[in-house]
Amino acid sequence: MTRVPTAALFAVCVIVWSTTWYAITWQVDTAAPEVGVAARFGLAGAVVLVALALRGLPWRCGPREHARFALQGVLLYGISYVAVYHAETLLVSGLVAVGYSASPLLGGLGSHWLFGTPLTRRFVAGGLLGLAGVALIFWPEFGHAAAAAGTAAGVAWTTAAVLLSAGGALAASRNRSHGLPLWPTLGWGMVYGALSALLCAALLGRSFALPAAPSWWLALGYLAIVGSVLTFACYLTIVDRLGAGASGTIGVMTPLLALVVSLLLEGYRPQWISLAGALLAAWGNVWMLRPAAPLRAAAAAAE
Image (cartoon, rainbow, N blue to C red; front, side, top):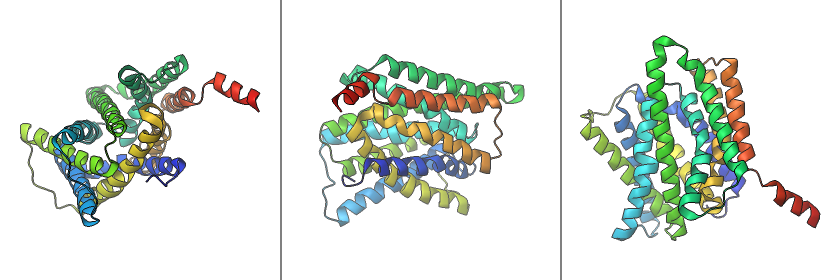
């Protein structure tokens, strides 16, 4: 991954993750969300660890490393995705993806509070514009009285997912700053995420029977291998290079493409206020994450 250009890593994350939101809908209709998450990340983690073992690369780690793996895995791959899957039982996948437009702001604030990463007023203002855009997108959904309760629950699940995954991204950034290797961290983190989802399933009394529907298994393969192993390897490499805040730029394009997928495949028909909200959310994120004006001016003067 160290030899892959950052732009290519971004492209993989945006293109794949904009479609995984829809692929999740193939799973939540036929099995409990917790079971789908456990199967997805259990398979993904096993693939990574077995590949490391077969290639003779180090994959065994000590208790301290496993504690860090577990923190990252439970937040980034486990309970955050349980919340995502529950949200998608109530909302179209594109709307859940749009909720992740708040990720850059949360990642930047968390990185500032925990690691002392510089934070500008424009970054905060752009993040708030992004949140306003998200609010506009969801606003018409609350206007449908019959679906208002389900929409509110879907928004609550989405909010929980965004908060938990932001914490997971910060844990991942901290792990890389401590020199933990990418692939063992990814593999073990996904295993711990799967175990946390299984624990949630057990506590909630979910059935562990796997469905026979071919669509569920096709979605599982795509989500585990392409949507988890490949994309999270790309994403964590970006986090390593740019930090948790700047890596949130992935959240600018992914929700917009996910909305297009929902338009084409889920019959989602947004109102104009929702479209305006999507553009506002994207503009706010672009504004908050571009280089500061003084730096650009200084660079121009140097030329």
